[in-house]
Amino acid sequence: MKSILSFLLAISCPAWAASVTWGPARDITSDGDVSTRGTLVKAGCKTGNLYPVVNGITFTPYGSDTVGGVNASNAQTIGQLPTGGGISAAYSTLLGGNDYNTGSASTVTLTINGLTIGQHYEVQVWANDSDATSAGTQSVKSGGALDPSAVLRMNTTATSGGKGQFALGSFTADAISQNITFQGSTNGMIQAYQVR
Picture (cartoon, rainbow, N blue to C red):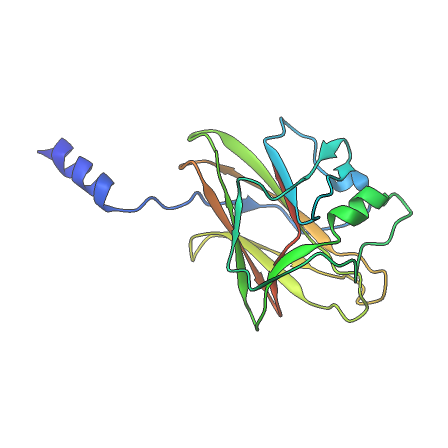
């Protein structure tokens, strides 16, 4: 009877996404920000038809993964990361476009597909707007209300040419997909991510 009850509970209760444990927000400094630990699973960005290569990692336009809650998309270079001082043109391109959802405290959800249950993953996400008027933040977390989050500043100096932040998180997949939500202080926004 116990095994039948366990089976019934398993099919009647939805699986929760794994909780992502985030490291501290780190300032964008150079191409070396892009993690190369472990084995690349996928790396995506909002760059139209461009495939920027940063620190040896090729980022592709969003493919089998999905971005939800998007009211508009923006591939303009306004507020683009300035080059020089270790920042390549490819890194600038990588963070030059975004998908966003307008409205106060709005959210955008990235669904990462094709995961292997039980496999440990590292995920990296960025937030950058080098425009002088950008003083917003992105709160990044997995699906559960009590899951930890990383808060990334879009421009750490709030000056023209200022740089944003990135964070690394880790999780063990308990499903073949994983949701990560970006909640903005002004607009929820996603620019780029990688999974290793």
